[in-house]
Length: 566
Image 1 (cartoon, one colour):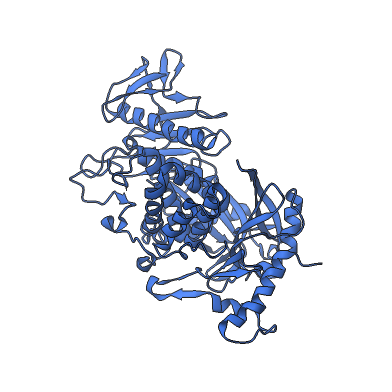
Image 2 (cartoon, helix red, strand yellow):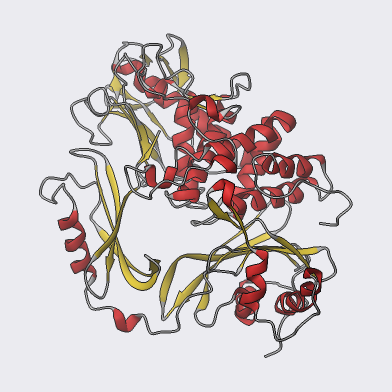
């Protein structure tokens, strides 16, 4: 089969770029050996970073490479095809023909999703399969303009995928995996109040440096404490390989927690009025509930009143604030981007207040439920009263239905950062640049705030030189998702303080919904945001330059150089 343009470009680069390192071009040099010269290890940042960019082709095409033992491209930009791409079948044919450009010796591809943007571009998400099984979180996002040209590709492919029959390794059933997962939890299945029936999905995955066939069991409950467990069970041996709790922490009228009367959408049910809003999405209903303080169960009982004026104070004030603030977050996404609810498909959502006893947290449970603790009146105020916090959690819901950034390590820090970004934008206050500024009380013993302007104020790093390499455990904050988010938050401040919330929001939303995937890292986000700025405002635009400089200033990528064609 004739190699298509991308394979030829990368192969050509491996021969001719070698001259630039002081030797003669040598066609016998292995690809792996060449790529090792491109990957740099930044000792000062304590992690390996894929920041090396290589120009390929005529110079207006370039590639960023992967890291560690996986040397396949992470981001490729330029004109990447010879024959026009007209539909999903053309995309699947293209990626199959170019499999070797990503170092793959096995596996095939299947369309996961496609979407068209306002500029007329089509974005195809293509997932990697092996023996009919999903290779977990391994994906290509192919971006095609309305002329049928592929102008860039985001890639999260592991070139070390082994050419063995993974289906033959499966020795246990889905039911076995669920039972093993339940037995591994401290909270046994007869104690937990399941929100949904446990499930298990089969994947090919690389855990502890070894390719395996695994079941990922999902177990979600709210009592005795909120949990959304992903438990990875070896499909051959039944061994529990990894566990992770994915709970992501942080026309009537009513009086909210700030004492102000606000307009809210309500519904009449019999002789009562309920905090139920059917105007914010095409299919679902937005409802607000009271969990009764003594329980973590969500949703609780829907909040209702005998009149249209919900002004009784107490928990009703929290409920009014939650109802109003969730609506504000939904309205931002709908009015700015035309997004139909958090999932883009009109789903409803529940918001629960009075969750737990003096609960110092807020979270999205992964299935359409938001929960807000009442605080303890010493360290924290009620979480529902803070628009930035409510918007933060609503954005976790949006992320779960778009990039679905895995809640661990750099992808998890990006998940937190994108929620902070839109929390700040939706709140609309660019004076403090702080998340949770109305949450933390003066008497607090805890740090409940984050600053995008100066993350170091509250113990977060602001540059890759200070990246915290924490263990991927619950005690290690799943690899520092709430810690290292300070770095992309600082980059956002660098950008938004210059171009404003409106343009920054459009760039960040485009990157989140079109360019990122579950295992995206900080450099992937940088590349995605630069690409989004180019798509929206042009290759040589001030917006593109500011985005690129904003990330360069936190140690991610090079600054914009106008004289080098991009």
